[in-house]
Length: 323
Image 1 (tube, rainbow, N blue to C red):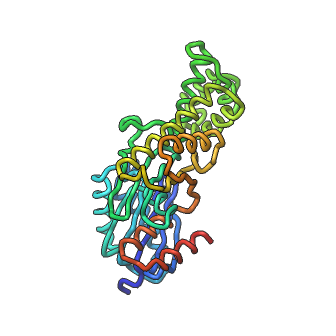
Image 2: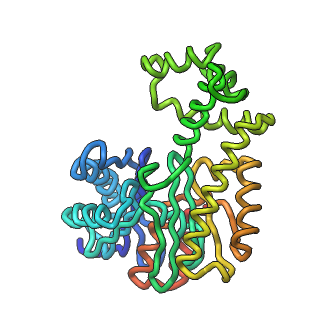
Image 3: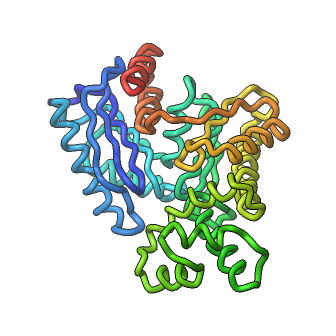
C-alpha cells in the first residue's frame, strides 16, 4: 500500500510498549500496546520480535504497511552504540524509510514541551536525565546504575531502605522506623524475617519495588533516616538537571525541567518540594513541572519534527493523546 502514513511512534519500556501510526497532518490512525521491551534479558532480535507484534496490529488497524519515519524511544538504549544497534534491527524490519532510535527519556521530554527544548529527569525504576535544544544539541548520561555514577530510582531507594533497616535492627546503624515498617508491609515482624524471605525467594525479588512507597510513608511520618534518603534522591535529581542545563548553555535562560517516572510523578510532598527548592537555588531560571502525558506522544512529536510536519500537526496529535 506504500507510504500512506508519515510516522510510526514507539515508546518501549521495561514493562510495556505503546505504538501509534500518525499522518503528516497529526491524525492518529491507530494505536496498539505490547509487552515489555528487554533486549538485555532476551536479546535484540527477540525484543524486536515482541515489539513487532504491536506494530503489526497497529499497521493493520491503520491500513498501512509502512511509514516515512520510525521514531522509536526505547528503554535500554542507554549508549549511542546501543541506539545504533537497535536502529539497525528496526530498520531491517522495513517498517519505515527512516529510523530514529533514542533513549525513552527523550519521549518524556518531548511530550512535556511544545518545542524540542528543555531537560527531563525520569525517576522510575531507575534514574536518567536528558536535555535537548532545537538545533539538535543534546545532553545525556549513560544511566547504567552505580557503574555510571547514578543513585536512586525506585529500585535503588528500596535497596537503600533495606540496607539501613537491616543495620538498625542488628545495631550496626542508627535507629529508624524502617526496621519496623518494611517487614510489616509483608506481614513480617522483623528485618531478619524479611531478609530471610527475600533471600530464600519466599518473597519474589521483583516485589522489592513495593518498599519504595513504604519508604516515602515512613519519611512523611517524620523518621529522620527515611527523610535523609528522600532528600538525597532530590539532590541527585537536581544534580543531573543542573549539569544537563549547563552542558546546553541553558542555565541562564528560562527552561522547562520536566519531572517524570513513577517516583517523581507521584508528587511525594517532601521529594517534590525539595527538588523545587534546590532547583530554585541552583538553576533559578528552570521551570519545573511534572509530566503525566503518555511518552508515546513524545515519540510521535519527535517523528513529526523529523519529517518537518506543520505546527498544527503537532497540536493535533497532542490533542488526541490529551483526550
